[in-house]
Length: 133
Ligand code: TYD
Image (cartoon, rainbow, N blue to C red):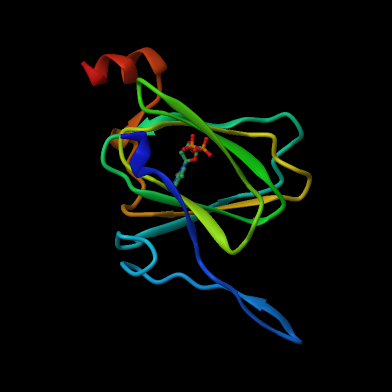
């Protein structure tokens, strides 16, 4: 399961005016984007995430600064550091994630396959582990 989560390079168009990266639904990422949200002004030491989603696909980009994301599928875990605006991490459904080590001024941009639905969240780790069985 966790092997479905991967860093995807978006590419970068560079010229003397700077860099540009882009994403389109169903091209570099394999879902339709229905929602975009972003985390910013995250205080030093704060942690985000701490939940899993039943159906939601997400793609996470450090558009500014850096942070770490720990993924756990109930069996294995892996930690990614995101710090490049021209790449992102695809997270499939049913993955527990924790996001931490936000650098000052960092912005975490999240593309999501569905609009917000609290029923899609699993917010307790024991509940997530029970869900696996
Ligand atoms: P939460 O998902 O817990 O944030 P994170 O994944 O960054 O830890 O969401 C925090 C609050 O924001 C919670 O009350 C739900 C609300 N929220 C929305 O209303 N819409 C959204 O798209 C998201 C992601 C959260």
